[in-house]
Image 1 (cartoon, helix red, strand yellow):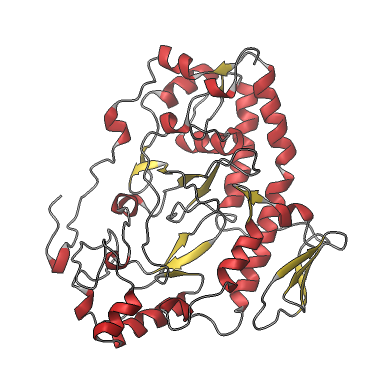
Image 2 (cartoon, helix red, strand yellow):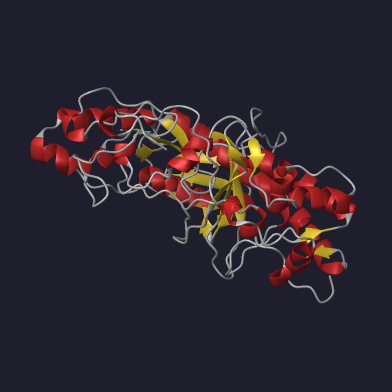
Length: 403
């Protein structure tokens, strides 16, 4: 790509123009890696009265026990003021809490300072989310990750990016893609290009920058095909197999070699033996070095995952209600995380080869080229959410929302 730099590649913000800022929870206790603990926290809250309930809730300017808000789209969380709440806990749902970390969240709008209802309206079957990662100059890690569950947009580096739904309407309808882009790529590449193809390409070719994720495009059909195939593999791994669990080949598959302690306090790694020590006694091996060292925004994923489950919490708070001993489910999740990161790390040479192909030829589709083709700039309407309300949504104190 002589004379063409990454700065000339189009921004993901233009290719997938509708984006939503990350959620702002306001308090940590409604989210966690264990659903049973969330139910116990809720029960403790509604059993408390007066000042005790307020102290446990942790009010902010956006949410207090007296705040009236509409229900979260698609969920039956209450809309009455929390000061009067006495009912059961809304059923926790899976969410993505930062890279590669699926946790649980109580889907109640009264508990979340800024819940981004527009994301909840389009979540569900057929939807995928592209999550830009916080850009840290010189740091390793992908520029964008994908999720099938609703992501909170959290960045391990504290520099959150944007959440970009692949579709603007529920059920995987109306691609969130610059108008005319898919048709333009289909014509240039002489093949049908779908929104999911574009997401796969971005996962394989996207690069971070101070301006946000950039997605170099190509008019070389062979390079495009390789990139989409690579991106589909990355997408499959990031979705944890999408129904079929990823596995390393026999002999390289991690196992628990010594039982994990009830309350492991730290992780350590022996690169020579490929052993992950969980606490002082627990042993998982073999663990590839690439999985242990895998980073997003300069933060090691495995270490962060462990810290969020074992870190110190303040006594007497709802966050302090958590498993007394290490759950077996967490061991399974850790083994799966190691497997996924190892398999993704194996694709690094393929990503490097793709980047080399994009940099070596004269087949780049630059942002200027998309402007000349009439794809850019995108209309303002494409950057706003679609009107998707086809049913009543409950407003504050049980009133119907008028939208």
